[in-house]
Amino acid sequence: MSTTTTGYGSTPTPSSSTSSNRSNSSSGARNINARDGHIAPGEIAIGVVIGRASEYFDFFVYAIASVLVFPLVFFPHESRLDGTLYSFAIFALAFLARPFGTIAFMQIQQRFGREAKLTLALFLLGVSTAGIAFLPSYATLGGAAIVLLSVLRVGQGVALGGSWDGLPSLLALNAPQNKRGWYAMLGQLGAPVGFIIAAGLFAYLLQGLSAVDFLDWGWRYPFYVAFAINVVALFARLRLVSTPEYSHLLDERELEPVSVSEMGHTQGRNIVIGALAALASYALFHLVTVFPLSWINLYSSRSIGDFLHLQMLGAVIAAGGIVASGLIADRFGRRRTLGTLAMMIAVFSGFVPMLMDGGEMGQNIFILAGFLLLGLSYGQAAGAVTANFAAKYRYTGAALTSDLAWLVGAGFAPLVALGLSANFGLGYVSLYLLSGAVGSLAALSLNRALEIRD
Image (tube, rainbow, N blue to C red; front, side, top):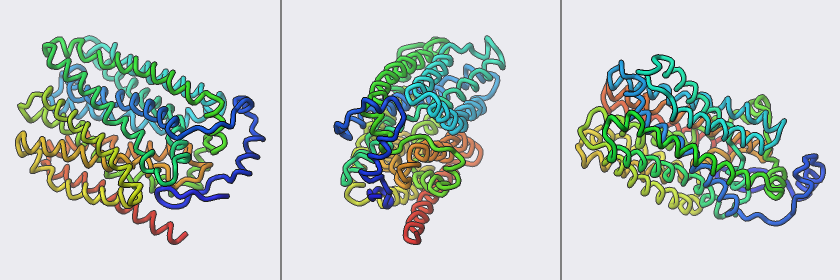
């Protein structure tokens, strides 16, 4: 076995002779005609960026609608605060369902192949997203509308878990050793891109339609667009993962599903540490996107359209931070980068009450500074997910670790932050964000200690 150094330590990868034997013994028909031509990391990065951008657009369309639309359309019988909290509870269902989708669709891949799995997952995602666009309101369907919204949200979560194609792991394994931070951040650019497009669509509709028209039919258009983008992304990603070259490379790197029981028995420690290492970034993720939008909507007279434009500017800054994170991580190391950003997020958490209660100027500073920290930290979150796993476990381990990180760090963040701020004050949001930073620092320290001991 040869050794390749990654973000946290040394990850064993197959030697050329081992890879050759595995490749020759593979029974997959797709490998028979595989060429041995070199595939540049940049080519893999294209598939990663396309896949992540489409997923994040879906993500933010639903997130923004959870603040501006669903409380009024599906919970008109509740107060605005309670309606938003109920909406956020349904929002969290996708994060609970996502690990189950990962496990179920890996079984599908083992039986029917990678292409069938990806097609079915993105089909389910498209159907669930389009289904929300056609969903009748509470006034029309009563409580059944809430049940259907919950079912479709679970469908989105299952589909997102199933849409894992292994390309981020393949990119991490094939990136030049001195540019791993740079290539790790490429897929993360999908987050600000998806947010900018989703927020821009909602801002345009809010400013171009009356409130009645927007709540009646205007809010549905972003979901139609999300469905169309899913179709385009499906064909773009299939075009990559179905080629003999990519199939050969994925198999050569052992990027195939592993049973969950084996993962838990042999890699449980790495899954937990990988998820917690990026906890600060994932906690901050919703505290500068979804939560402040809900807080402004409930407790401020600011124009929502203007606030969305401010957040779009923040997303541009976050994109710059993501790019910078690649350069910083390659120079100083991923673990040091994540640890430093976790400490900065801990310091930033102490200013949440002062900034959010500080009028437009304070809120602007909170959004722009928060997005900058988010970009710098989130840019290397993918490395935290994958770096500890040996090649055999990287495909399944990266997917499950990402699922756990989203669930623990971000899934309930809007619900918890809004509930705490509404009932106890913004100071408790500071404590919530601080706990994420502490969790990241603890996980990074534990990982380093285990590396030294092992």
